Length: 263
Image (cartoon, rainbow, N blue to C red; front, side):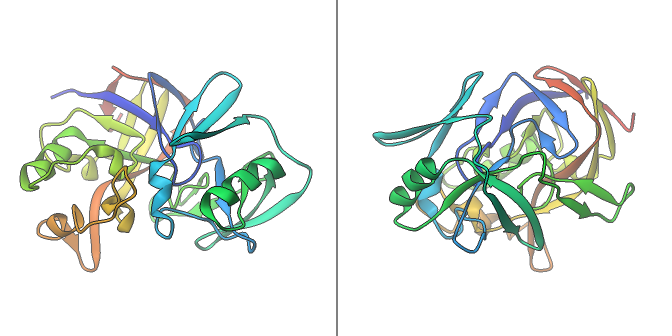
């Protein structure tokens, strides 16, 4: 069976809503605009749905100049290239890197929304984050994502999970970048080198999931799908779903592109 790109997604602000695209530029650190912004506390530590489930209710839109964030009746417009002069050192798990605060007024908007002092920062030309990996090329650039620049999910993996759930869920819970056609559940785990569109990708390993997959679009957390996944996708203490992936050659990827496996 041919594997085809069915959907492409970016999540511009870490832990906020995603944007579906027809085409996306694959860069070494992740799709253009994917997880290039992030909310941080006064210590520079990242803010996510893990602590603030309400972030799951924020949607994002993008035009050629701006990122627009909405929640209920509130919204804020963020120019894509906006930044202040002040440099903010931030932490994403074991990584530390420099970023720029976007705008103090925008930070204040988010602070009021979350009832906590936060700042919105973004990666700029001073921001560098490298991750050591277990396969060649042994290092990769990465955005503000948790661990890897790309996540791939096969359609059959979602179908198999939903067949086991009493209440089916959408793949958006898993925050994948690339959804591909597939006939075998979790075959994406075993892919290696992939040519797709103008880009070349490499699957590194299955993705270990956290509590975020249990949070619905209303910001409510439950036991699923983690409880069901634990019955057939548990490896030690980890629940696996989707494939962590890096970019070996940058280029445009479009919906409908055919994947050339081990190309």
